[in-house]
Image (cartoon, rainbow, N blue to C red; front, side):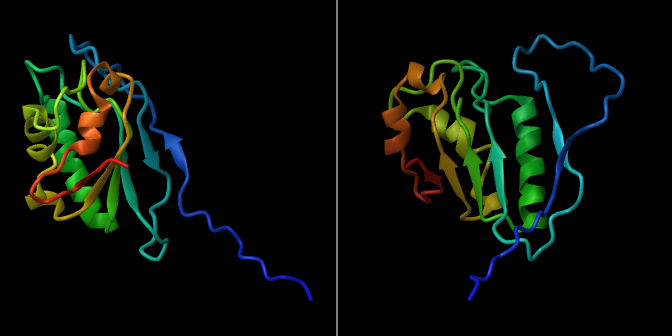
Amino acid sequence: AQASRNPRREVGVLEPEPKSAPAPSSPHPLQPVLSMTLAQPVSQDAGLALLALGDWGGDGDDHPTTHDQIKVGHAMAAEQKKLSARGTLLLGDNFYYDGVTSNTSFRFQKTFEEVYPRSAFGDMQFHVIAGNHDHHGSANAQVQYRSSVNRWSFP
């Protein structure tokens, strides 16, 4: 007898957004260079939905949060509700430019908790990995970080 096979079901295809007029130049060195959107919506029965974000960690200790980061946080909260996303993958460079040195750094509050608040994201888990800027400080401090709600999960 032949073993039954589960066909792989494609739920969406990423395509580059169409180019429009060039964006005005900005003095901010962390401008995105590529933006992607789903070509077709993900159906509600598509399984596990996650959000993903990298290179998100403010603009240094003097500016721990950026205006663009706040706008992205609002957009992510809306998408999380639409998709019923069950988690977010934080893909590194969580704290520009030199990471954090302690699990009690003010950057956890300013750069993470205030931008991705429980009031907007509920108890959704943020699964974290370190990027190169995070290793300029102590990646272990990020592993050890715990808040009162424990939404930050660094393996």
